[in-house]
Length: 266
Ligand SMILES: C[S@@+](CC[C@H](N)C(=O)[O-])C[C@H]1O[C@@H](n2cnc3c(N)ncnc32)[C@H](O)[C@@H]1O
Image 1 (cartoon, protein in one colour):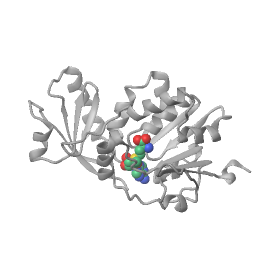
Image 2: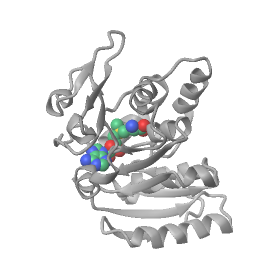
Image 3: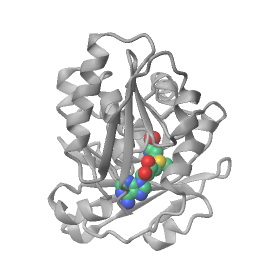
């Protein structure tokens, strides 16, 4: 499912030449996308976000010095933020590996290089975690929603040095379509359709799930070497994708791994 949308662009109330330039750049980038219909650049004046949503409910991207923020409603912006990733990276220093890192390590530790295809980029935290943890990985971060794709990729770029940035490709597409066109890069495919809620991000995840839908159709994909699925423990995804579900008693988030022996040649 590809989403077609309109969008409004504006700056923070306290604006400057750099933010105006970012609006201009965004206008030309977003105008080139088939999935973006109509773009309206608006003068922020002193208007609050709430006031900007009173007359018009079109999604709004606000350019602030900390990066672009996407509002679908006046309440909860969507943007790239490091909060939960930072915690995970800190825990790793104490040898506590996040499950996703353990799983990727299990399949890729002896590989001199590999591609990690994140089919459901969302806030980009998992892509960022793998990018930072595995220096031999090239990341393909796919997000179907054009505005989420734009703010998250623009936001994440600010946290990456030049070398690291070269190892991540941001793609605005439905992963089901994209993977069919690029079977050659599918070493490790990762799918996370789960809107996991943690205490500090209830609202943002809720906002993302409202906008992108929680019941995405799960289509079988077959051309990967390894598939990792993250989903709610009751999710039909594990069965549908024929992935072995790794049971974790203490949490509702489960992961599954499938090795495609045919593609590996054994
Ligand atoms: C639960 S979020 C992923 C969160 C992400 N793992 C993170 O670390 O922030 C799921 C995201 O996948 C996107 N998505 C769902 N189905 C997709 C598809 N078929 N192709 C590309 N993106 C998809 C949704 O728009 C949503 O942004």
